[in-house]
Image: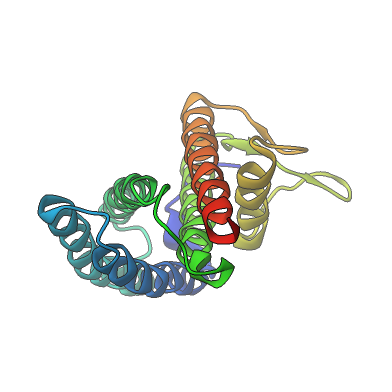
Length: 210
């Protein structure tokens, strides 16, 4: 795939919808983390600060999409999107770190584990957006994604959601192949976060049924 402005394709509104879903999940997760009693004052302040920051930067993403429609070859689209997704990844790491502090919390049934599932979903969607942008902005593409007639020449956003889901649930890619170092680093980070989320899920599930 040739390097291009990542928001030049028609799928930019799907990307926006993806990140709005992440933001809605984060809204619920932030409330749960801050009211759980497992975080100290500094931890609550950090989680809330990143949540408010992501609200502001979501407006940046929507502005970039409008800019991509009006001026598809603007030079600020790619660095702007990179900055947004970089913050989204950092925000995700903060949420997973806060979640880790609740690993030994007493749960009131398996239904109380929904926040772990929500952060897992945020992980899948956020990394899918990162993979989408990285693949479209890397000369020759960052991934080899198989299709019916060989490698896909123009993968869609859903293909990256599938890649991200695979990476989270199998702790690594299955058929897809990362072919650049940045893609490999992103996958290593996703696998590490997924292992932490699974550890918290198992720990709290044991507490819930114990």
